[in-house]
Amino acid sequence: MSNGKFAERLTNSLAKKGITPSQLARYVGTNRQTIYKYCKGLSKPKDETVTRKISIILGVSPSWLLGITDEVQTQGSVRKEIDSLLDEMDNDQLNKLIKFIKDFM
Image (tube, rainbow, N blue to C red; front, side):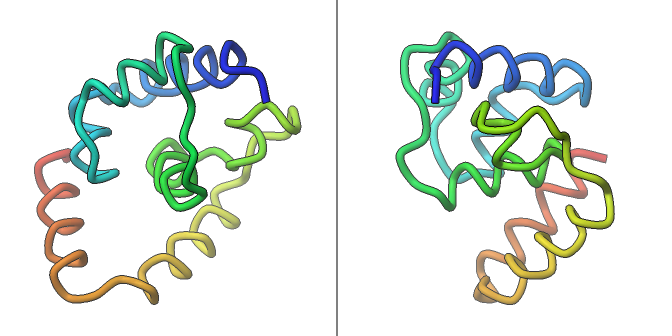
């Protein structure tokens, strides 16, 4: 994966969705500096879970975001991915996610 392609797709997707790097950082559970580094192409997620969380909130496939494929994920497959992640979350994580969604809307 190219950091540049990932950074470009991340930055464009954030702008398209109207999400700030700070908002994304809160959802992912990292600090905003990490997200800014991703956006600048200085680093990329090393953890698959982080990539999945980012792709879910942006409504794109992890493969597309990482530059592996040029196919953007459909809404139906995003919902399946969300259901899978929700099943893995504990109550504290679910409450944080609910708060984030309410703040986001």
